[in-house]
Picture 1 (cartoon, helix red, strand yellow):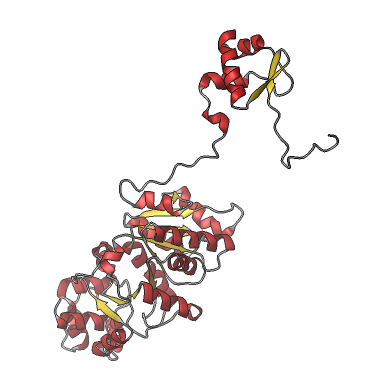
Picture 2: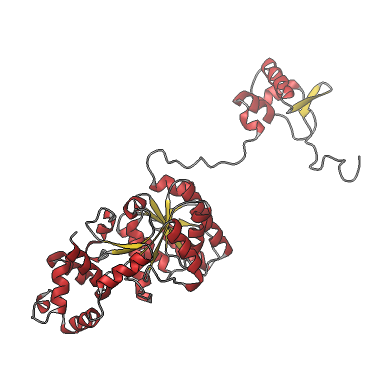
Length: 384
């Protein structure tokens, strides 16, 4: 991309709001340099753009009066950042799936390569006012995904977002924060230290130029970038009207994986997640299950099962003989054979095998189950 086009795109990040599809269409049709020229020139060419209205053009021109792309590029460079545009080697091509609503460009703070990190990334998002359970699950997912070599992406907000970032950082892993403001702005202020750590160890990115502030609509529009940038989105605690569900729905529309961590059925903070799981969302409980879904062939989560008991290792014939013994008292070998559906000789042989393994013992002429020891190893209550 030429310097003039880059400067024009940097200027347009102050003129066009994130997700402006009309602006994106004009960018595609006439290019950034021509678009900023038409908006600032008063030669009637801006009015020829399809969908341009006098009111809209007045707003664009008012914003364009304060544009100084060289100053913005110098400001982001001063905090160790840069401006990445479509067509750059570092541009994540999956953002092109957003069509005309893709970012005009991304302001990036941090050393790693944005395109390479985005290739193996997962979003972990959720409620700001999360419960201790939600914070624990988000941190566990962040740490687990980082240990498996995944980049954890979130929005640096309070609650689930912050816990996911901290989990990845605690594991010495990779994490990216997508902001709804300038990348040199610590928002929320309570996360200034966290955002600084993310910028030092990972990447802080955003569509808005340096020093720009967040608004409610910008938070919502930021979520489409999180969804498009990553292979899948995991929602940890969300109410029905949560912005996290906006991210999940955007991911679904883009053909990305959507996942949810279940919670108590009585919790309003889990209601939105459960609604997601009733639809196309996939239930996950840990990082291994997330990696199995979004990863490559061979990224399989371990099989889930309860503890293996000693009797689980018995062959079928021995198990039938063992099941033939009553829970209390002794019984003859012939009766055991009858109940187990085998011969007396077969039953006797199996009983001696079970005896050597500690399952049964002789009781006079019969056989009985070996008594289980009490938990404390001492005498039973009420007697010796």
